[in-house]
Length: 434
Image (tube, rainbow, N blue to C red; front, side):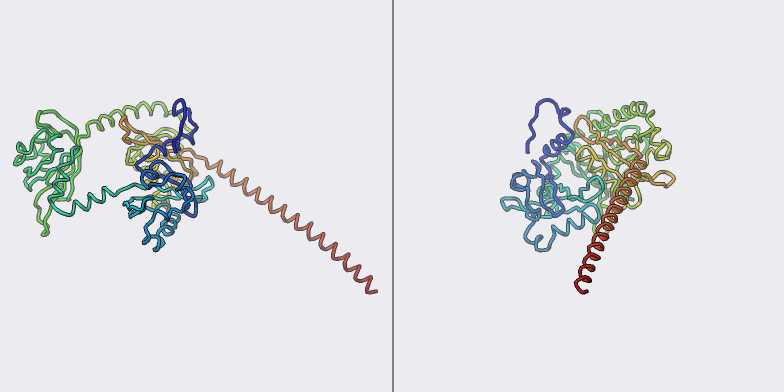
């Protein structure tokens, strides 16, 4: 469905903005199912991937997209039951398009609940992973195909080192990123990519020692190109061992993340300004998370509601505010995934203070992106609405008791009427008998 409107996005109602956001996503099939699994909504990505226009898909049971084998095994019902039980079902497998062709899909299904928490249906997000699966299978087929695949990568420097750190091969991404051609660098030691300060500190040797010992090394830091220019790099080094577990070399992947580093520095400055702005707010817990869910700052309202000082909580994962049951169910990670995918997550539920006591919270998580659209963090707002919830529960209880009393009163009146009619009947029968 295409939304047409005049003016700016801000002029749209919130529901229409959300619908516009979902419908603008074309790489993911996003649709809602009712509790029986019948399709109720259908975005543009679903039409592109599955082949059905919205008018044909809406009203169909989602099992229509499964293979005959999976339908015979009752996979659709099993998936919905699993999602209802644990709060999430994640599957990969073949699905069927309208034209009968198959594609390999990665799907996530989560229950959708109304305000009181009743399950009203399911949200289904599917992505066509056929190309990635084919690439993975091709990767295993032969070393030649692997080499061609690696050579085609332009955004990452991918190359191998021998056990002593000598470069043994070089892909086009490495040439683009570091400036050396394969003929110039193969046979050279990889330490020439490090700054003079890092070489003097013995960092290249420590990197290989760590990768050999632990199997994997990952870090960020300054690296040097052929022309002497520096860039901020994300580096991964994996040890390669033969069937006898003997070290035969290292696989090395380097990415230029200078722009991301600048964005993170900008984010830190924004965080400083944000802290000054919100520090005076005491009725709301306002704080930021990094992309992994670590707390980056903390206002006075957060300290009052949750009990932690800034020194105690900054750098900790926000999942500690959830109950043990919610953590075991993966609720914190799903909250961030939802916020990252759709831009916003809102829910109510029990949260845990520092002293272990529980409070009923209204929580909102908003995605923060840089100018390229990459997620650089999240803004989180939490409010203690325990008193409001208790008042609502008390009102519901009073209403239930009142309804019960009215039922009893009506029953009493009915019983009295029946008894009166029965006595009259007895008098008539007695009179006739006399």
